[in-house]
Structures are given as structure tokens and as C-alpha cells.
Length: 231
Image (cartoon, rainbow, N blue to C red; front, side):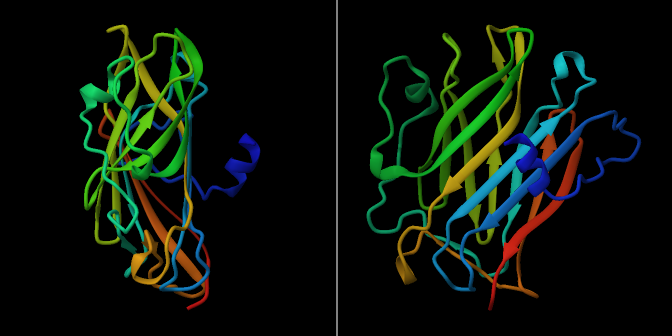
């Protein structure tokens, strides 16, 4: 699976600003819309992988924000009929045996992997994507490690741009956690004016999506990926 993800991903971008030591750090990303035509109800697939085999504990730099710029005209209707926003706070969601978001607020599935060395090199973090408002959403991750806290990634949509803010996570007040893999899948939902996601402009047979990732050390990368389409 890892080999297929890396093969599908586009070329590694150069870290900025200049002068930052690249070392063996790599970041790959592959984002695509599942629609095949402009103006069509669409699903969404995002796959991102970061590696740095030379870093202590093979822990790569920790991403802090992910910005996805979709083709012009792409629309998100986060309060389409049938959806119900999850209004729970981070405190409520991270409280053991506390409340959970309503099923009607869930719009996608998430699978993440965290590096929490020296506790564990890889910790699977299954989760879900929820709508929290007219232009707000949230990823809730539940690490598959006893005692590890629930993690919340808040996000927002503005026009054709989706931004995810990844918080700094420290386990046991000692161990910093780096998100090394993120796979997000949103199926197409609704149609026409009630579609959750409506695909934007198809240019030269491609939906082009621009990705920008910013890390805790303030370095950033810019990538581009996409999928085949017809106008």
C-alpha cells in the first residue's frame, strides 16, 4: 500500500525558505476530485505521506496547516439537506466517555498515522470528518494506543479553498507527535443544487488541485496534483 501511495503522489516540492537543510525529509501528496465533469457532484480523496529516515526516531517535521486550493468554481455546501452540524467543543470531544458528534454530521472517513517516538514509531489513528458549521468542519482522530488522547483538527472552507489546522500534540506532556500519514475520503453526496461538493473548472482535461503545507519549524512546501476530467 505504501508503495502504491508514493507512486500515485506527485513530485516532492522544495522546502522554503531557502537555506533550510533538506536532509532526507520528503512530503508527498495526491488530492483528487472523483467527478469526471465540471459542475458535477463530486467526492474527494486526499492522501499525504511525510518521511525522514535520518531524523531522530525517524520522526519528520510536524505539519501545522494544510491548504487545498481546488479548481475555480468548486463549491462546498456543508449544510446541504440532511446534514446536521456538530456543535461539540474540543473539551467535550476529548473527555473520556463524553458525547460524540451526531451521525448526520459525518461526511467522510479518515485514516491517519502518527509518529510518537520514543513511545511508538507508528500509531494508527482512525477517525471521521464532520461538518461543524456553514463553512466549518472538523476531523476527529482516535489513536489506537491505550491512553492516547483524542485529537481534533479543525478546518474551514472559503470559496474553492479548504484549510486544515493541525494542532501541536504532546502526549504525556513529554512526547511530541508528528502526523506522518493522512488519508481522507469523502464520497459524492447529493446532486445539483444539493451536492455536498460540486466540481469546478476542468482545464486541459484535468482538475488541478494546489496543496500547501506549513510545518512547526515554519518551513513550507507547495505541491500540485489532480485527476482526469472533461468539461
